Length: 436
Ligand SMILES: Cc1ncc(COP(=O)(O)O)c(C=O)c1O
Image (tube, rainbow, N blue to C red; front, side, top):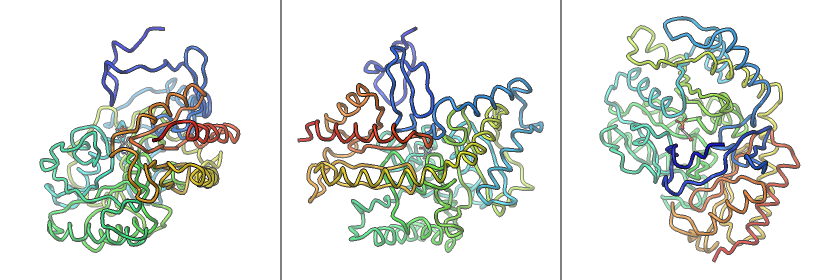
């Protein structure tokens, strides 16, 4: 096996420090390295392998499509592209809308912003985005992201207006409850829109729920934000790149609120093909698509709606449905939350446990539970966090951490024994490691 430590440029790390085993195979919620060591995947790698590793139905769909037609560009029709667009509009309940396909999440968000500006006839319209969010690593999406890794990336040039996050555990507005935090946060967004002048704002772009910056919005936040945007005639773009496809117990996280949560545009990637092949999408509601129907669309990507990727997307939707995975995510998610709450009773280092309505939870570690003093200032990490990851790997579980957050997002197909074993390992590591 060729070592890749010196030749490949790796993401989000210091190149000279990169050191990781080479992964050679996987099945369901497990993958293994070249030495045969197996890992239970508690983060779906980058929160994207919702269907697990090497799902046979996805592999078959890609193989069959490859045999009939690998590529056709957007000047021509392609059956898998049309099929996937129709199915996405159907599961989203966006009848009469349109879908623009991209290669991943960042370019989906970039295009959603372009479409929102064009459809609102506010070509220089501001985009309101929050702190502690992540929308991608292209230049515009770095500016849109409120992420410590990409802070100060020329927000002004990209027309970004920054607002605080709906972070009830440490509410930026000093609220005493989740409901109050949601209310004050949304009221603040309203005042930012008014200050800028609603006609100068093209959209609010936010993750409805879930995200590696550790925010799980309080229950009333998203529908209140929806209403705020309506009142000011500003589009709401839901970044469902991570929260979609069962991760939050619904096809799309906003659906938890029914029509009261319905965005004007939403962006997808990751679970769209369960990461078996790269694909992203912008889904436009009918009233937005209608505005663009007779205007020139000055954008495109060579690989828009690549047939191999769209065939995988069609197979992915059938798999979520036939294997009842959205419902399974809700059920296992509730169990995961229950187990994490029990861990919280036993480990003083756990300050907060928050979860979406599916298989996504954040465990926030603190120095002092009463004062909520962070274990280390965000986004730095306590030294035991790195040990937590290394020892987890040694014991056959792959955990994702960020600062002092443990991010739990296993594949929706995870077996019950694997799931319990991984949580037992987490419990043991929290007990054994020194958090002082
Ligand atoms: C919420 C969210 N939006 C956008 C992105 C960017 O997606 P990609 O890495 O496919 O460009 C991510 C990636 O982690 C994400 O979590």
